[in-house]
Image 1: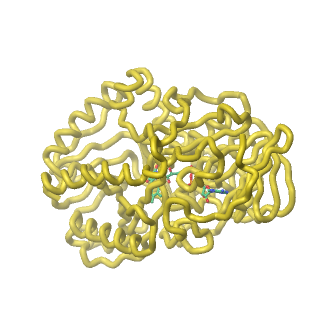
Image 2: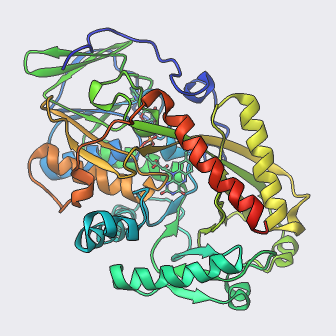
Image 3: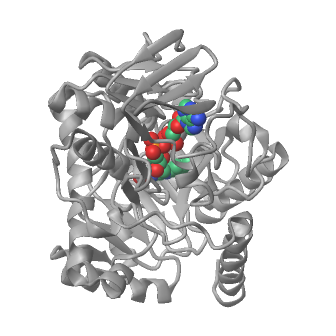
Length: 460
Ligand SMILES: Cc1cc2nc3c(=O)[nH]c(=O)nc-3n(C[C@H](O)[C@H](O)[C@H](O)COP(=O)(O)OP(=O)(O)OC[C@H]3O[C@@H](n4cnc5c(N)ncnc54)[C@H](O)[C@@H]3O)c2cc1C
């Protein structure tokens, strides 16, 4: 490993600085409603040693810390640049559902074979169970909501495609998804324009993402994890056979390091990740709580999380306090002006999907990074030419369950006592984008063309 002896400052390499500002409030509903923050996570002060140093205090890092301590009693320190859950883990839509890879199950079957696709599907099911079991056995207060996840078809053609998808899940996953006609969905989900049917996926639920992140942090602490908030890793040195991570207040030296920084990973953190990750912005808007009459206007009855089939799809649900949250794309620059434009776009989307709510005021909007790779797969493992450096990254916007599972899986690799089978797709080498400087543009171009096709051909 070379080139990591210099310190650096935390500047935004790919997006506007404001996206990396740990001092400003994120502005999310989750932040406002999560209750007490995690205590005992003071910044690192002095030079410390431990078995495993974890960079990043989101679901990946916190799940890894908890499992390393619970199962292997290794000493662990988590270094988090903000506070626990500051990243995507405290800001997401709270859909604890299928996902993780950017490739669909069909595409994985084509590329890697049916057995590997099946392993991936089993892993996704296991990841949802893991969160549910953790919450139940450890008594985590996460505001669990609903049972399953709806996919709503916004055109007749999309509805036909859902039929193919149901058949695909049966063939590869061995389970049934329920197909609902528009009329059946009006009884179970909600009533609105451009609804042509729906699929009820039998796994998944909603949760309060910031409460979950904080509960996971407290759980790890109860097992002995030391969490340092406001402790950005700003330099990385080799010290004999060990790694020394530098922060403004001191350093942690450890034989093993886990990189759990996902969409907030700087290219210069470590050469193994330089040019390998593509952070993309996802943004959410939240209304004020809806009245009974307003809910009745769309015959809202779903407790399940939902998403739709639009190319720029929306994910949404009505929360236990009856406010609608709806998320989707969040622009490519991260500037405050762009944040306002995309919030306006999402509010128009709410008005299109739920005309009766077009005048309902919005209380919150916020955004954060999801993380993609060039091969659109989640990756976890040990860096080949730098022993002791482990990573678990890239859940393609679906990390609530998968980051929790991956944190446990990587803990097993770190301790050497493998705790689960890991699908072969996840342990492939992490590829670099062909032209890293253009990775955002390439994505924008591909997505732009698909979006234009949708706008030209299909009703909105
Ligand atoms: C708006 C939005 C909506 C989403 N909705 C969903 C959803 O509904 N369902 C779903 O499954 N997934 C969703 N996701 C994705 C999901 O939130 C992520 O996949 C998951 O939280 C990733 O967890 P993580 O711990 O790997 O990363 P993060 O939670 O992003 O944590 C990484 C942490 O690393 C820290 N860090 C970075 N660099 C350093 C450094 N140098 N030193 C110290 N710390 C550092 C950051 O401060 C950050 O807190 C959404 C994401 C966003 C942004």
